[in-house]
Length: 152
Image (tube, rainbow, N blue to C red):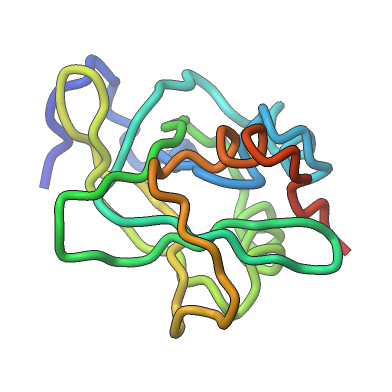
């Protein structure tokens, strides 16, 4: 299908792809992976998608898990155009790990919806995970004075 709305140009068959970021890859988390990714990104737009977020604690800080949900809840994030090589995608896939599955979803932006890649939690809800009711991970971190996961 064709992307609708949002005033975003078609990406064609090149290396540019839409990518929805909602966690430690967003620039405002200032993690090492966000800094690595930033020069490869273009045209950031506030966006949302259907789902819910939970925060998972690890020794290195918190990271969010995007869960599928059958109601009206939304996850807030950033839609970007990512200029990523196949090697870059492998690096991202390895960073996200086996717990996440990269998939194509519809993302809502001002003026319409766009197909984008996103990393969705692939398994059951982890024990001890905390719901992020408003669906905004950087806001949740700021509200709690918590640190994002910064990698191993």
